[in-house]
Image (tube, rainbow, N blue to C red):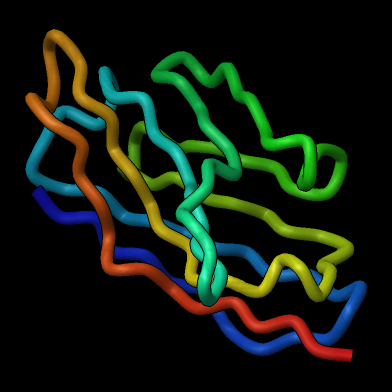
Length: 118
């Protein structure tokens, strides 16, 4: 199982970034995917989740600014982040959830750093 995240970087307040996570080694089509983030000194938190048929949910802090999407042909899940705020600074992790016909346990990507500055 591999989850390769990319797209992090340094931006200023109000700018945008798009994160991508390419998955391999499991049946992506049946797997719910998620993005988590962990800011320095804080616990990892769920940012957005997308199920295998495209239904999505978001943390209240990112609703209206972030959009999660998936491409089941390319085994990719993306996170479009707009109107970035200082408090969005964190390491962002791609997550693949266990499912009856997919993974037997949670799997994590290596993380990609997003830094938002003024």
